[in-house]
Length: 114
Image (cartoon, rainbow, N blue to C red):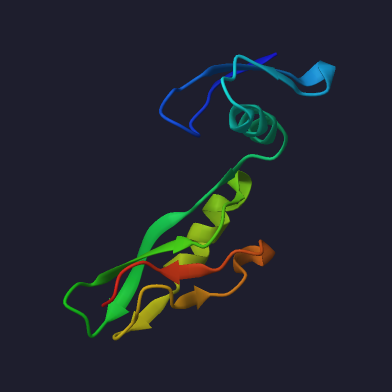
């Protein structure tokens, strides 16, 4: 049995996920907590937020994020990919920097006009 704190809403429910009983979730106050607990044990995912180099802008780094959550185990490999990226100003919020990063189905996108 794994114990988690749900992060879907501000309530912070203390969840218990029983892996041996079909990933049954208890302690949740809403259905979203049940889904979160099950997914967190079976296939944890995170949205990657970071910065990449940019030339010709007021700042030297441009904030980026993935358009969807990617596998938690792929975060370090994704960060290695970001190390080789250099953008050239101007860029707009929502511009795709890397399409389908690590074949995850998520794009790396710009989050600030620069």
